[in-house]
Image 1 (cartoon, rainbow over the protein chains, first blue to last red):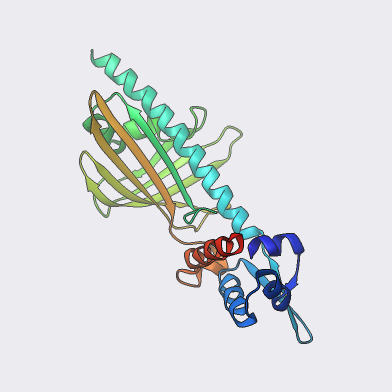
Image 2 (cartoon, rainbow over the protein chains, first blue to last red):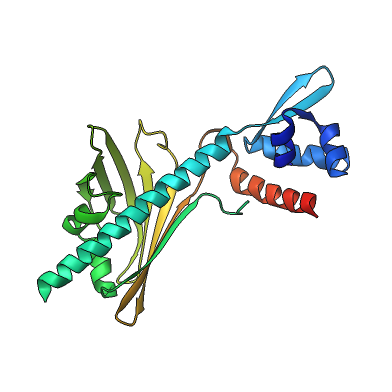
Length: 91
Length: 151
């Protein structure tokens, strides 16, 4: 569903239902979960509810992982070097 | 999409003994010499109370004058094989306020050990944090939806 939202911009629950060949209550339930999680936002135009993917939470999470991954990889490189220095100093 | 997207993980085979690697986490002077992402970033240990419930606080001095401060509490200490501590970046950093946890596992091997560092984000900021399990739950849902869509 996230892919469908990402491709098509704002979609109504009906459009998404046709896309996934699912009943609208099922789609609405999933959308509610995604909306609660902050991944999807809803705009209401008259009787039509449109849903749009919020990019920021996913991007934030990716940035955090990339940063911590780089942090620990760099730190372990230095730990490795330090341990080798220490063992050379002892021998 | 991975079911656990907010985990950073590093595994490394080291030629030092587990006790030696453990002491690199347990001693403030040792910590200051390596626990940083690059040699040009200097680490000042502001607080270091290495016992269960004890706090640490590290200041990272980035070239150019910027300072990043990280603090946390030692949750579990099992010499020489396992250390668990919380990891919080202080404001004004963009990732300030995210609760995360680092699990360090040191497994003896012939002529050394394997070091495994697993850093997991426990909750998401903002809207997601207000709904317990929201982030993980939503991603489980997403994974299920995407696999249904592919089927």
